[in-house]
Amino acid sequence: MKFFAGAGHGGKGVAGKACEVVEKAGSVSHDEVPAVLRRVMSGASLGSLSGTDYTGRMIIVTGGAGFIGSCLHAALRRRGLRTVVVDRLRDGVKWRNLASHAPDRIITPDALEGFLASEPDVEAVFHMGAISATTARDGDLVWSSNVDLSQKLWRWCAARGVRMICASSAATYGAADRPEMFRDGLENIDGLRPLNLYGWSKQAFDLWVKREIEAGAPVPPQWAGLKFFNVYGPNEYHKGSMISVVKVKYDEVVQGHAAKLFRSDVPGLADGQQKRDFIWVGDVVNVMLWLFDHPEVSGLFNCGTGVARSYLDLAHAVCDAAKRARDVEFVDMPEKLRGQYQSFTCADMSRLRAAGYDAPFTSLEDGIGQYVREYLSQPHPNL
Image 1 (cartoon, helix red, strand yellow):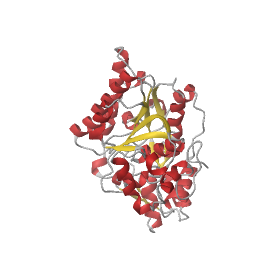
Image 2 (image 1 turned 180 degrees about the horizontal axis):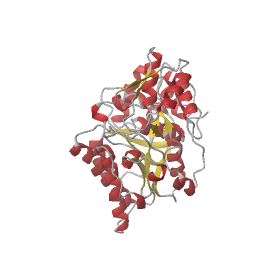
Image 3 (image 1 turned 90 degrees about the horizontal axis):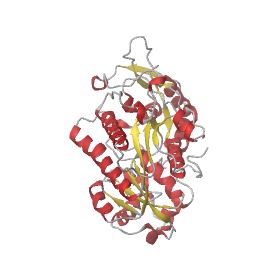
Image 4 (image 1 turned 90 degrees about the vertical axis):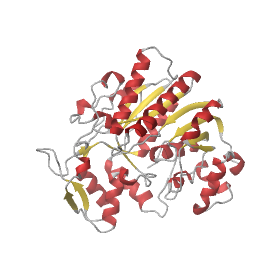
């Protein structure tokens, strides 16, 4: 099974040119990679470090060292495209998400405005950067990061004819509990009531885009918002409490514990039967690459599988992939999550299908199996 279209993957890292970046930069070891990335951050072109011939106009990936952004970035580098990552590496482990596919440049969000003012030759912006914690409490910070910056990028792209593909979220759907309530498209968003600050910020930007279009304001030549559902896969390891349930359950079972699931707080809903639309990150990347290859397609789209699976299904799939007994324990939901927890999500994928996207989505069992086999059980689990 391939991680994303047009790129094979072995157990250790990205195949092809993306791996050559690190190898040609002087056979850099895994622990020495930060020095290479620091040189890129200082303004050195990756081509001067590796000899790899990356061509074409630049692709900007905000949040490019994060989970979904770094997986997308790997695919873009695999295609031989020039990239600029906008993110903060700090002193943590996010640099590992770029270790096998360093970009041409890395700039911090604070430096983005100055970079854009230099009028770089940009083909597209993939705006993945955001404060994505559903437990976030600082409304001013979330608005600045998730709405203000998104609006500035939109206006910049519109003024310069640059395409923009950005992350929205299934968190915008709030307490929707039936499949017919998960309809995408700008015409269906007015009545949505998100349950948390993060979802509200994404809804606020989607509504702003709708108003801009209705007012006849300039828009990017291609624009697409993607309402990501529950994404799981490699390169999420820095996310702390926001890491996917798949990774959390894997850690529990390989340490000899039961897979812990929240008891249901919905009357009539059995424990473990809360359902989400879980999507393998490779499928998310494939959708974004397809949009990049189809500049005539614009709109606000769901990005899930169209199938809701229970948390009990997920726990069993993790146990099976890890070759452990199906041992599940139910625990009370933390107080801070009550009233903010979606007990059901399921993407209506008909709009994206109607636009022409026809690739199949990975099943929960196959996605978890690949995640465990090719990443979580490996010494270096990053893409």
